[in-house]
Length: 216
Image 1 (cartoon, rainbow, N blue to C red):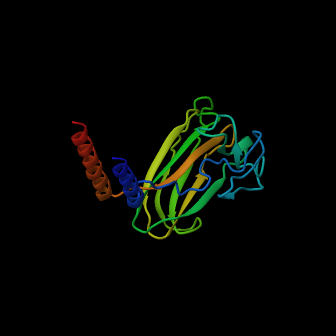
Image 2: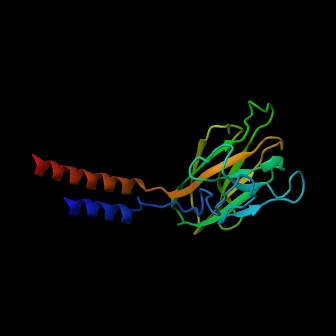
Image 3: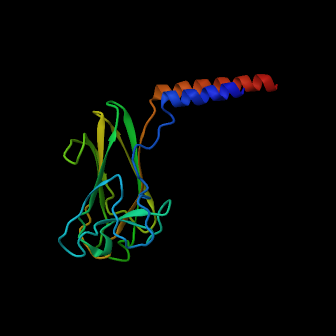
C-alpha cells in the first residue's frame, strides 16, 4: 500500500499537480523590515516610483502594519504617506507557451472609501507576454474600487503565449489622501489540464479499490 501511495506522489509530480508558485517574493517578506516606515522596495520585483509630488519615493514600500499583512510579517503598500498614486511593480516569470496559469493576489487598504467618501483605492493588474511592461496584454483586471480594510482575494487566468510572462501591477487610485493600498500573497501557478485530473482520479480510485479489497 505504501508503494502505491508513493507511486501516486510520483504521478502527481510528473503530471504537474505539484506546481509551485512561479512568483519570487510574492509575499514581500524580502527584505526583512523591522519597522513600518522603512521605505524599502521588495526584492525580486522591478519598481517604478517618482521623485515628484507629495512624499516622493514612497509610492511602493514594504510594511508590517495598517492593516496587518494577510500572511507573514510584511505586505506591500502603494501610495504610502499620501504620496502620488503612481507606483508600479512588475516581475517576469518563465512560462510554457500554451499552458494555462492561475493568478492570485490579496489586497486591503489602510482607509476605505466608507471612511473617506469619494476616495477609491484601485489596483490594476496586467499579465503581459514577454519581458518588461510593453508586451501584449494577455489578461487584465482592476479592483474596481472594491478594496476595503478587510483582505480580499482577486484572481484571474491566463494562457501563456511564449516562454516568458510579466506580472504588472499598478496603482491607479485617483486621489492621494488616505488611500494607502496593501498587497500580499501574489502567485502564478500552472493549472493542470482536465486529462491530467482525470488520470489522477482514475489512479486514486484504483488505490481506494485495492485498499478496500484488502481490508474487507
